[in-house]
Length: 216
Image (cartoon, rainbow, N blue to C red):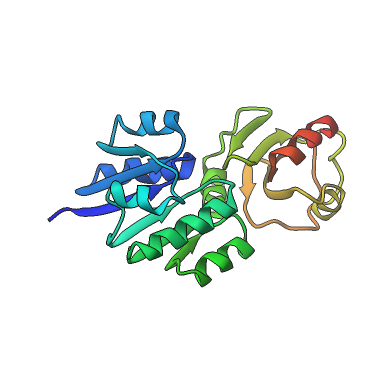
């Protein structure tokens, strides 16, 4: 008896999960309403379907009912994510693990029956910081569809300023790491004063990162 897990939403996170599960002895059903994503995952997974996951009947037709585990990784559409979890509950799926964009979204998902809520942006952020490559001057990494991480060498706008000053100047961004004299600091010291040649890593929504570039 092969365990079946459905993964709904094949953005970066969902795609990665579906692909990883397909390597194990697990039967994966992959679902997204985007044809291109479904096509991409079908290289790894036989049961890949273009379906609107808020449509209960459509989910039932492709076998997403009475399953032990369903992972909902719908990107930025909170409404679709909530309606999907509700449909999955109605179809008697037992353990629903859902990705949330923020804590309010997470609380709603828990209330309507998600067994576990994950915040991949936080996890991905931690993992990515560790993987940041040293030798690039400016580098950006997409953490999700709307969240980016940017690494750059401190410019004159930042040198001699304290981390706390920089953060209050750029309220929508967070400094998640900095490197000074060859050593990365993950524990941010708000009183640390940025020096010449330091590397700074900021995390924030793409729209704020765009504006931020003008000020680097």
